[in-house]
Image (cartoon, rainbow, N blue to C red; front, side):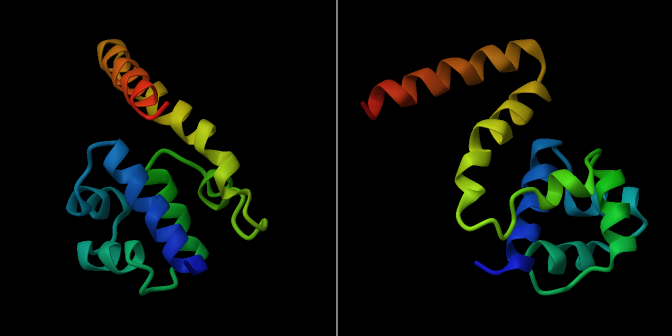
Length: 110
């Protein structure tokens, strides 16, 4: 997977974690929704200014978005941190349900 696709996947994942549509993200960032789709698919190389708008709309930072890209397979080490961030953003009751699902899945694959 190339750099633009990796960034696009991270933007899409963050948007989904926040329960936002492409249209909602576009509105918050002051961009067109078709442009959001192109960025998420890795078809467009967004400017730093656009990336800053997206980060603000997604309540994240450039550092988080670009974390461990190009570090030679270090992406796998980010899974626990990504999981923590995803859990942390959810209401407590949803955290409990997600934890139960995760435990069940781990037991299934042992």
